[in-house]
Length: 331
Ligand code: GDP
Ligand code: CA
Image (cartoon, rainbow, N blue to C red; front, side, top):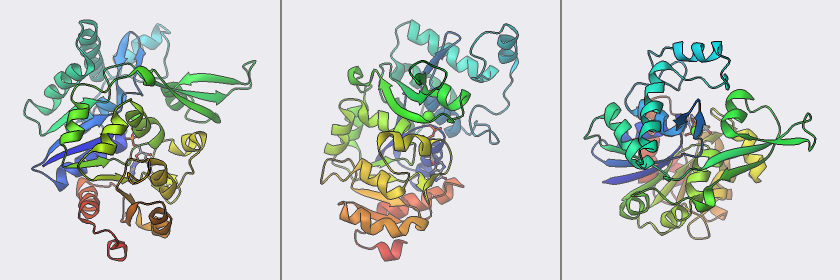
């Protein structure tokens, strides 16, 4: 069984661990978001790809929820002593090794997919059942247009990382732009893997800055629409709020309500112009099933907290095994 998962970082990696638990024998290909990527201190950093790799390796720091366990911060402290900007983005000593290797390989001409494979090999081994592909080899970066009373125009554009890490998603958001998306091409293997999949899953990752950019790479959305496999998506919005992160600040800026059904309808049904066959909402959002059905989506409600891989696996299996029209049983 070949499973393709579209995914971002923290939420995406929890989901993929659930996929592994639900289908231990399956070959899983993760198409990861690279629109969070940024260059800092001369290092190319791919936060979502690294979160995925570290999490699948069981090496993620459990308290922080991102970055490596057993991490040190000596390089960061030294950069701060130099007042080397930016000082707001934390880079652990062990994590920096990842970025050094990536930066060197990219400079030597390797495409990001090869770099990602090499880094995954160190963490997951050569015969890992999970393959991680970046959505694109090309540079795409999410920028956020925020309100800023101090600038003459009353607004300012910042990199997504500055918005999230430095500004804590506090300034009002006026717009979201994926710089470079129109010229980006799907990474090697992405379209072929989607076409060959037995199952395509859209993780409950951020719809605006994780899943949005993946689907916006020209060719990927069409490949998902044309996939022979069922396409099932999962809501990261539960009872009108994201479980973590800043999706609630970004969704209104793209005209989507912070609501599980609204996100499903935003992705849309493959019977219309969308990408999904089925959308899964949390049990507490079961009242929105009728709205989803009216929008042409097969939908079910199930507890969606990814507290453990086993609980995550349970809702993934329930979604895959769901019989359309059988909502009463599932919820
Ligand atoms: P990021 O790249 O690290 O921001 O992570 P993702 O984009 O992959 O995932 C972030 C999204 O995952 C957020 O919008 C969360 O609401 C969602 N999320 C996090 N934990 C859970 C959970 O336990 N259940 C569900 N359904 N969604 C979750
Ligand atoms: Ca991310």
